[in-house]
Length: 238
Image (cartoon, rainbow, N blue to C red; front, side, top):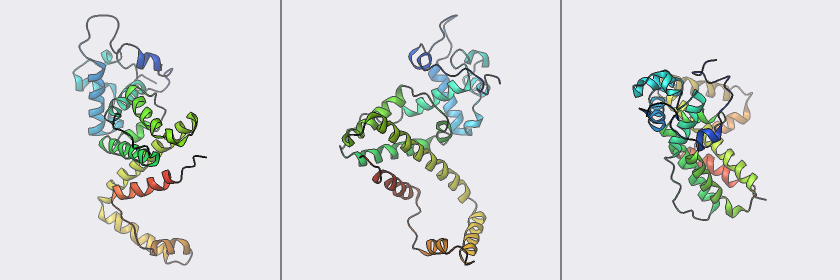
């Protein structure tokens, strides 16, 4: 495929991407910066979704020719890596930790959720492998520091962070989808009638009992906190 689609490319070289120069090495002084191009791509994704991010549209936003952008981001995969790391720079990394690793890890997850809600395209962008840049690594460093009191080895700490990030991304993606669906009162009412009918058919006694139990707060923040507690409080550090 073409550079625009990103597939079929040899892959992103992490050293070249994160440790190399952010500016083209040859030719006249660049009229644009990688930071400006990445910011334009983020703004486009925020406004129209990740599928709207193409090199052509990003070029139009910065007033550049599409071919000139390939000097900064040779394909969409590289651009997505730049976008993820740029928004990861919004995550605080210097606030003191409490030393209570479960509380600190929950705080990490709440920060991730807030970031993903500000940038609803981020869960999808994280669903494929991304090469961590400096901002992402700074936040990873904070999460690993939060896990230091557990005494777990490095591999286990990395696994927990990956598990936590996957949980947050999946939850936020579901949260966004549910919020969109809730805008249709007819659909919500139809789903409620369907579940009531299924629960009353006598073939699903466990479901009927579950639906008859007192409900819990459905506010998104409360729901996330409840689910997160079940995940982190149950982590095994042995």
